[in-house]
Image (cartoon, rainbow, N blue to C red; front, side):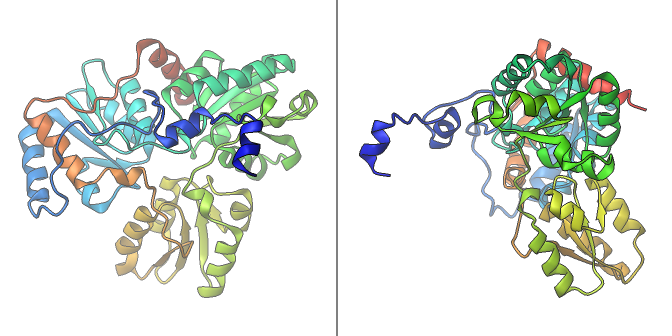
Length: 394
């Protein structure tokens, strides 16, 4: 298409396109902003010593959380490690810590702020450490989706269930509309609870976790699921499709887990005879169907802990964790490989590096609060309601 033809169509760039082009800004976006300070050089040989010194100076005033997908250079300074919800709960269990330094991504720090006390300050070492999946569902888009459901006459039958990997705004929407939050560990329980409340579920923002849980774990069919695309009029769905569906899946995905394919599974089986394929439920449905085992990050770790010596494993999750597990279990004779040939780090999670952590800890040690993540009171109240519903699940 020529430039003249494009002009005739009066094509206007979308808000997301303008953000990516750097021509607009969104203070609620997880893409973050510039770091307000001078970072130490990444080649500084004293970074480890500086981090240790600053952390020691802060003492019990600081509590450092490290997500499983963090770099080794960062994870070594974590007081606890885990997945996003476990870490948020760990933070809430440390009321004496004035500063919670969350080495993860934006939505995780928001969850920690929601669950911790008002006097505690949650800090994200790099504000640009976001989550592409969480960014795939904005509050405005979800409100428009609810209008579509209302016009189709089904909104009163729909219970929203939002994955933990979502913004505080989406969690608040979920709480306000009678829904609950879920993790990859308890998604089935959350869906079962939701179907006791209503006839349909709006699952946000990861289509794959929603589909895999409904079809693989709960016996539904793929025909029970429809995909709502926020970039199409009415989500690309007819009122009849919405009335017939049991699962209305948001068109979102994890940029890391979405890279794994059926070819990845077939290739690793050919390369490593006798391999066990273990993948995260954020992977595509065909990948999950072809795997031997499927489970959350914590499930993956526990499965490898219990695996017999000499067993072979191909893991479909973030590469930092896979490498760490491969090194950890190599002395036990367990062979652990990355599912795909392509290197696949979580690029935004990897923005939390040692220079950012040193800058954060040294700033706090000097009495300067930096990069605080704070959720407004109304959003916090409704988001906490949704989280509490999850905590109350049997």
